[in-house]
Amino acid sequence: MSSALDTLRREFGGGIIEPGATGYDAASRTVLAVGTPAYVLQPASVSDVQSGVRFVRDVGLALSVRGGGHGFPGFGTNADGVVIDLRRLADVKVIDEERHVVRIGGGATWGQVADALAPHGLAISSGDTKSVGVGGLTLSGGIGWKVRKYGLALDNLVAAEVVTAAGDVLRASTEENAELFWAIRGGGGNVGIVTAFEFLAHRTTDVFFGTISFPAAETAAVLTGWGEYFRTAPEELTSNVVFANPFLGGPDAPVQVLVAFDGDDPQRAAEAIDPIRRLGTVLEDVVTLKPYGEILEEGMVPPPGIRFLGRNGLVDEESAPKVLQALAEVGASKRSPVIGLRSVGGAVSRIPDDATAYAHRSAQLMFVATFIGPQPVIDAAGPAMEALWDKVGPHVRGAYANFLTTATEEDVAAIYPAATRRRLAAVKRRYDPDNLFAGNYNVRPR
Ligand SMILES: Cc1cc2nc3c(=O)[nH]c(=O)nc-3n(C[C@H](O)[C@H](O)[C@H](O)COP(=O)(O)OP(=O)(O)OC[C@H]3O[C@@H](n4cnc5c(N)ncnc54)[C@H](O)[C@@H]3O)c2cc1C
Image (cartoon, rainbow, N blue to C red; front, side, top):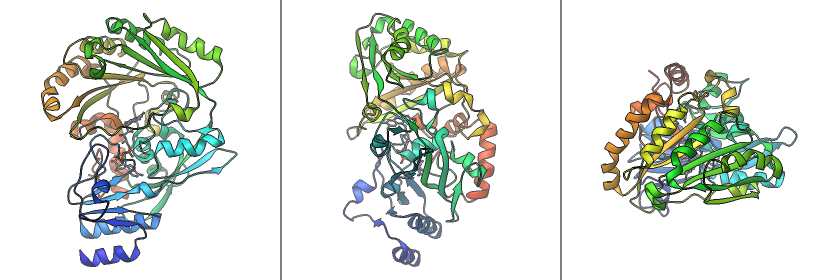
């Protein structure tokens, strides 16, 4: 151990933080998990990441890679292992003004990206929160406010710089190391540490964004109408729904339909959004034109002791009516989790399932059911979650990794259909045969 540590100290230009050092507590914690790692390495360059990987291999400790630190299962930290924390690799640079290619450090957050791209009038389809990491969100998908028009965040990736388990730096794109590039787009960090992403950004105008609320008593009708509308809605329109929110009254909470119209033409926006206004009795309608960067929320750190138990599913067009009906029934009960829905489809569905390691292309919507509270609330929530799953499980075609809170074998099977998992395992055999990168929804090389 001591010679490996000596070598690391000699080679490493970033920070090496050990227990007891200033900043250790903050560095060993993610947004939702508290860890006690033996070392937190904060690389300042790609070669630091290489040294970090070699160190981990030499000392044989468990490795966690931390991007933005927002992963629900807390993969970004561990007990007694090593954390490679990428937060110092956060440069955002437009490297091709004509094609709008943007190079982003593997530890940047989407807020840093939005701030850097706003002066260029550019944006990248990503998520809804500034503090979420580009790394975790992109490597497993990326469902945000432009998803129906521009696809998942990973659909906008044109290349990545990757440090492999051997400590090599590889460029992955459709031309170079194409299988690695396939695996990066959906493989959730299984095949290496991405030190830089290259995205194709698009020109953005201000966008129409806001919330339209309906009474809880109209939940079933609103959900059914919403699902029906998103079979044909214009792709500029992306929408989320939240209901049964315990902080707004649980089963009596209004149904909130959030809309984002990607464009600044008021007439076209109204044409796209008005069918949603007609779904029921509008209680509140606050939709305004805003710069894209301003519709992203600041991330919130939950109070200490607050836990999440979440389960989600991707749902095809044919199953959507049944699932929406079942979710409306669940939301009306006192023991309901908060339920969120996201429209997907559009540009996401035009890409074949086997083009990337994200394979749920035909889904029209994704729902997330989440219990939130202190541990006793979470412990008591199991039966209610099972009851919900008994109703909707048969109509669901898989899970979205980024909104799962657990990390079971069943979760890995839901994220990766069999053919995707086999292909990922083959890429893993080639680039990470000893499963160094196991702090994720792990696909083992064998
Ligand atoms: C408040 C909040 C809002 C959210 N909103 C959205 C949303 O709108 N859309 C959406 O799709 N998802 C959303 N998510 C889910 C989010 O995408 C996931 O939690 C994601 O994993 C977070 O990535 P991270 O880099 O911040 O987290 P981390 O915990 O740091 O990383 C998550 C996983 O990715 C790996 N990883 C991260 N960076 C790298 C890298 N550069 N190279 C290799 N591996 C890496 C980590 O090892 C870990 O396994 C949200 C989550 C929260 C908490």
